Image (tube, rainbow, N blue to C red; front, top):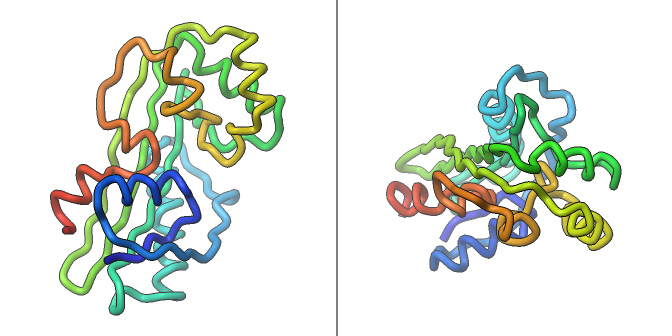
Length: 182
């Protein structure tokens, strides 16, 4: 049993699918003020900030603590969570026909060990159909998603090739977690 310090329903589902017992509760961390020149540096700083906030709130004595964050990068840009439909459209069109890297950092802390992992999954996407993009934008499913990207949803049928774990792209590298922490 561990404490998932994230409100992400996708991360919770990944843990359930992997058979990992957890409770889910988290305190907020504002990542808007992070300044980083690379996606890996950004995602590490965001995860570390969340980790420190959640350690202060919960510790890791009762349950091991698991914190994660994900960032999307394409065409030399860090693609954060879209703030509005127009922002989401621009972010998606940046990924259309391009290589998109989805980078997840996780920190797991128990009494016995601490794991810090940064994993990347790279997708080569075909060109997105503009009508599909508009339907996806109208659905609202892009809200709260790094890079407005859902590789298990909208982006799935545009994937030409993939290198890495789908779980990393969905926000939690469960393959790494299972190897070391459980």
